[in-house]
Image (cartoon, rainbow, N blue to C red; front, side, top):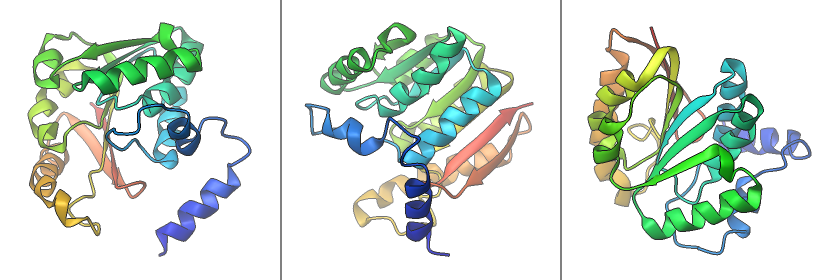
Length: 209
């Protein structure tokens, strides 16, 4: 199966329906040095999940320049909800805040700047959806708190979870072991019902029982 051909077909199919795309978002962002953001198919999945759950309280771990945040906020604002998003890099966070204001969604986003390992334990549940796209080495460490913060029936979504089996650039091979550990922890956790979707670089979906 040629995923490049499949992704192009899907992108072309929805080209006229999606106003916010990764390429447009990145081209309008002044800062050019940032951690890569999610692909358009992942952003579409997030928006659908938010609409399916009518999510009002969302936690995002890893903001970057705020493409996924903005995309989700466009849905969350329909339910008068709020996204808490966490970013370690102050410069990148500042650009994300500018982008939120430009997109008209700043009122629905609370941006916290700092180490997720410090900030996450201070948060209280219950979140409808948690989206994790932070330093992959933190995935296993943050999982217990993610489960704690999710409401019953809430969704945990994690990006890049097929790193162990895709053709990954050698410079990122050090991220494979923590993702492998995370995948096994999720798959074998009795509190979660989960699967991995082969979109983007792999997206884990898990429901808290």
